[in-house]
Amino acid sequence: MSATAPHAGPSPIRRPLAAAALLAALVSLVFGLLLAGAGPASAHAALTGSDPADGAVVDTAPKEVTLSFSEAIAVGDDSIRVLDPSGKRADTDTEPKDLSEGSTVRYGVALHSGLPDGTYTVAWQAISADSHPISGAFTFSIGAPSDTTVALPSQEAGGGPVGVVYDIARYAAYGGFVLLVGGSAFVLVCWRGGATALPMQRLVVRGWLTLTAATLVMLLLRNPYTGSGKFADAFDLAGLQSVLDTKPGAALVSRLLLLGAAALFIAVLFGTYARREDEREKKDLTFGLAVGGGVVATGIAATWAMSEHASTGIQANIAMPVDVLHLLAVAAWLGGLASLLVALYRTPDIGSAAVRRFSAVAFGSVVVLAATGIYQSWRQVGSWSALTGTRYGQLLILKVALIAVLLAVAWFSRRWTGRLTDSAVASEEASAAEPESESESVSADPDPERAAQLARQRAALTATKKKRIRDADPQRSGLRRSVLAEAAVAVVLLAVTTMLTSTEPGRTEEEAAGGTPSASAPAAGGPVNLKMPFDTGGQNGKGTVRIDIEPGRTGSNDLHVWIDGSDGKPMDVPELKLALTLESKDIGPLPVVPDRLAEGHWSASAVQIPMAGDWKIDVTVRTSDIDQVTIDKNAKIG
Image (cartoon, rainbow, N blue to C red):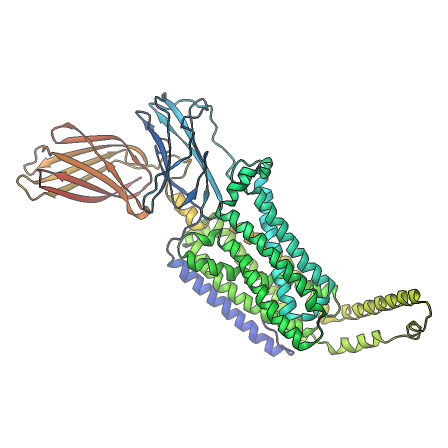
């Protein structure tokens, strides 16, 4: 159900259909424009570089190992481990040091002194700012590569049986939220009589129970999910305390507190509200419940927005409220759809007016979903190549296709809604409810127990007759079938949406693939040769700097600098400094101080290039105490 259906007649139905088609065309156009001109967004941190680099061979043992990331991360005591060829810890086994500067996120661990030659393994694990665990491993060698007994971990952080259960709980949490919020909204907005219907009460209460249980499971499994991957650590009190100190842990606790308020809302909705008969009092209570329930639902939706993809990256202050609107629209549409399905199959009393009101709610929800979905897609994908070439983009395409199928099925539901009428069914139900002579004698029966039993039998018989009459209505039967098909597609759609929330966004995946992944070979490149004229302004201040970088790829490089005077002969200068900057990734400047080898010749070995790209090379030449100049030139490395 996704559009407001007319009261009758086929002609008006075509107008909402045409509007929906126009809306779909506009969505496609805007989606294309946004992706075509999208800038970068950020979510799921990625390793952008390390020192030593992956696969590097250094002459002497470094004092520390540092790792750089694309965004802020949370680390613990064992987040970075360095293992020698025999598998023993080569680091000092302390919490990584935060070496971040400005927009550059960097962490390091100190190494033991006097490390022998051989191949060392660096294994790291952290929690991204959007709450998802990330991990990786790479190797470097001291002196020369050697055999190692350390095997690179094959299981990513958040995987294994704990990861499977955590993902199931994540899906159940979304499902419970949809039933709780969507079912409550359906009762208040579309069918107030549903407050007295036992199937509707069960639907909403089961949604609350599912969301509560899933949240508790996620809170207990959060520590092993982001750490050891062992179920036994779910009851580690120290680990649970550390989880409560994190943003995801605080969000889960907040959700549990809000669910306590939601329990009170449910009690009033299906208790006091259901028993109210005075229309004015019921109207006032409806308004109060709508406001209170809206605040609670918004708060629960915000627990996702504040701890996952929307909370990090560009425009987070806009992305979080947009994400809340998106979740509420999903709940109103899909939760209302589930409520309508239950009402059509389990209750004989829902009328055509309630169905049409839900059709209007569903149409509004689709409009909100389209607008918020476009913004989220622009923010998380960012380019056509990321849309088609990453897992996140492919899941997004699948989600859009499922929505298209859902809207197509909803078109049939709208047709059945337009034909739905209560008049014929109401008259037949009235005749079914007429007391028979045998039932009329119940009140005259002197035995109260037998009278009560006969009354119950009479009520059950009347309800059965009503249900049989409604089931025989072809319009109502057709609507039930189409809504059932919608619900089936919605279940798959919700599963895909849940997978999207735990998948690395396409932009970040593409960016990481273009950089230096944590366990890939150094990027291929070629020697870099530069010639840069300079003039410090003083006497004998003119000359030319020649730079060679070999092999000119990511990892360890040898750098040679020659300075020729204006006469073309080798020229010595009192001071020479270099710095490398990758401005597109906010890396650098990385200082290089070469050693003088001969007149007019300097060199530096093991110069680390952490990532392929267009590097700016700054050269500072000082020819006297007061005459100095800095020149620069860009070079493609890797």
